[in-house]
Length: 218
Ligand code: AP5
Image (cartoon, rainbow, N blue to C red; front, side, top):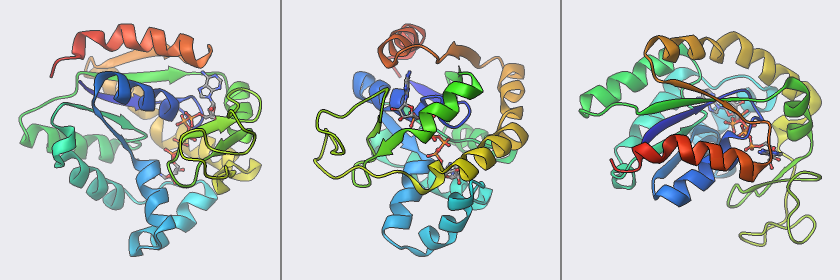
């Protein structure tokens, strides 16, 4: 299974990518998670990325393309992968195509998650994330078992610095301008599948699993 999860910030890409990766034993490649890890470890890349991320802007293409190329070369991707939050620009999509072609493989599907703007803003402004394992929760919609504590690793949950109101607005604007054109890009390549992401997490997961089941064997 080789799939891309596309959609505005907060549509649930990361939540569903975690589940699909676990269910089908494929790698989850999240550029947001990789960049946050670099920021946390204060690497040169992390220090460069932080200012873009805090403001809700995209990190330069060359940086994220390099990250994804490295990950795709990892043996953990041999059984397939879910790309969460990459590509996000047409140059990133073109670079991905080139990398996959050089490996003699291709994408099976690009899933475009659709959720109303109102719901997306509600999801993002109430999100709480684990700074250690990157699991996500929500103050109303996806409560952890113990308030403020990660179910997976026991770390105190935090609000992401780009989940402030002003950064959310900027991320949505950047999505409309730079990422939304990828819907047409993948439609033209007959890879796009529209998915209603507005239901409960379990409901969305069931629909997604049905759609992805044919691609289970790589
Ligand atoms: P990234 O981390 O990728 O952020 P994003 O795309 O803005 O996506 P989010 O993580 O905000 O949302 P999501 O769709 O994964 O939703 P989630 O499942 O968490 O990127 C962060 C930054 O890194 C970017 O702004 C940019 O600066 C940089 N970056 C990353 N990739 C890049 C790239 N390719 N190029 C350049 N720069 C890049 O869910 C959200 C909330 O909703 C959670 O609280 C969750 O519990 C809840 N929820 C999820 N599903 C449901 C549901 N069905 N019902 C109710 N609640 C739900």
